[in-house]
Length: 75
Image 1 (cartoon, rainbow, N blue to C red):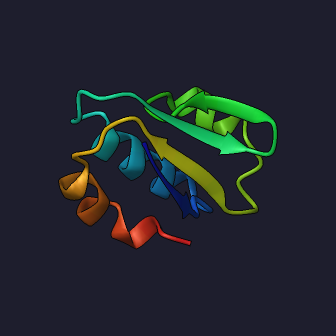
Image 2 (image 1 turned 90 degrees about the vertical axis):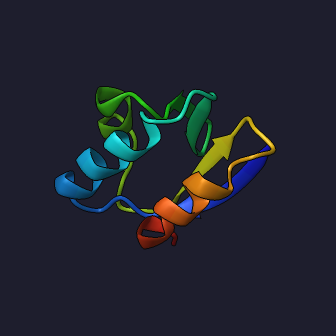
Image 3 (image 1 turned 120 degrees about the vertical axis):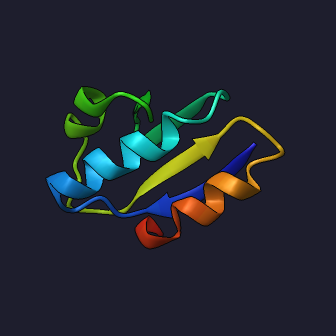
Protein backbone atom coordinates (compact mmCIF):
# COMPACT_ATOMS: atom_id res chain seq x y z
CA UNK A 1 0.00 0.00 0.00
CA UNK A 2 1.14 3.52 -0.79
CA UNK A 3 -0.13 6.77 0.74
CA UNK A 4 0.31 10.30 -0.56
CA UNK A 5 -1.28 13.64 0.31
CA UNK A 6 -3.22 15.38 -2.44
CA UNK A 7 -5.11 18.65 -2.79
CA UNK A 8 -8.42 18.84 -4.68
CA UNK A 9 -9.54 22.42 -4.18
CA UNK A 10 -11.58 22.96 -7.35
CA UNK A 11 -14.52 20.98 -8.78
CA UNK A 12 -12.61 20.65 -12.07
CA UNK A 13 -9.70 19.09 -10.17
CA UNK A 14 -12.04 16.51 -8.62
CA UNK A 15 -13.44 15.59 -12.05
CA UNK A 16 -9.95 15.23 -13.57
CA UNK A 17 -8.74 13.20 -10.58
CA UNK A 18 -11.69 10.77 -10.79
CA UNK A 19 -11.12 10.34 -14.54
CA UNK A 20 -7.47 9.45 -13.91
CA UNK A 21 -7.97 7.01 -11.00
CA UNK A 22 -10.93 5.37 -12.75
CA UNK A 23 -8.56 3.98 -15.40
CA UNK A 24 -6.75 1.80 -12.86
CA UNK A 25 -8.10 -1.55 -11.69
CA UNK A 26 -6.76 -1.57 -8.14
CA UNK A 27 -8.62 -0.16 -5.13
CA UNK A 28 -7.95 3.33 -3.78
CA UNK A 29 -9.41 5.26 -0.87
CA UNK A 30 -9.32 8.90 0.16
CA UNK A 31 -8.96 9.64 3.87
CA UNK A 32 -9.74 12.97 5.51
CA UNK A 33 -9.48 12.61 9.27
CA UNK A 34 -11.68 9.68 10.22
CA UNK A 35 -13.71 9.81 7.00
CA UNK A 36 -12.79 7.34 4.24
CA UNK A 37 -14.35 7.23 0.75
CA UNK A 38 -13.70 5.37 -2.50
CA UNK A 39 -11.25 7.48 -4.54
CA UNK A 40 -13.20 6.64 -7.71
CA UNK A 41 -16.47 8.08 -6.33
CA UNK A 42 -17.02 11.70 -7.31
CA UNK A 43 -19.89 12.04 -4.82
CA UNK A 44 -17.79 10.50 -2.08
CA UNK A 45 -14.99 12.96 -2.72
CA UNK A 46 -17.37 15.92 -2.53
CA UNK A 47 -18.51 14.71 0.90
CA UNK A 48 -14.99 15.34 2.26
CA UNK A 49 -13.54 18.63 3.50
CA UNK A 50 -11.59 19.65 0.39
CA UNK A 51 -10.17 22.82 1.93
CA UNK A 52 -7.33 20.73 3.43
CA UNK A 53 -5.05 18.12 1.88
CA UNK A 54 -6.46 14.58 1.90
CA UNK A 55 -4.62 11.27 1.86
CA UNK A 56 -4.83 8.93 -1.11
CA UNK A 57 -4.30 5.30 -0.12
CA UNK A 58 -3.39 3.03 -3.05
CA UNK A 59 -3.77 -0.71 -2.49
CA UNK A 60 -1.15 -1.80 -5.00
CA UNK A 61 2.64 -2.02 -5.02
CA UNK A 62 2.83 -1.24 -8.75
CA UNK A 63 1.36 2.27 -8.94
CA UNK A 64 4.18 4.19 -10.64
CA UNK A 65 2.01 5.13 -13.65
CA UNK A 66 -0.76 6.44 -11.41
CA UNK A 67 1.65 8.41 -9.24
CA UNK A 68 3.08 10.06 -12.36
CA UNK A 69 -0.40 11.02 -13.62
CA UNK A 70 -1.55 12.55 -10.34
CA UNK A 71 1.56 14.68 -9.76
CA UNK A 72 -0.42 17.93 -10.36
CA UNK A 73 -2.63 17.07 -7.37
CA UNK A 74 0.16 16.42 -4.84
CA UNK A 75 -0.08 18.61 -1.77
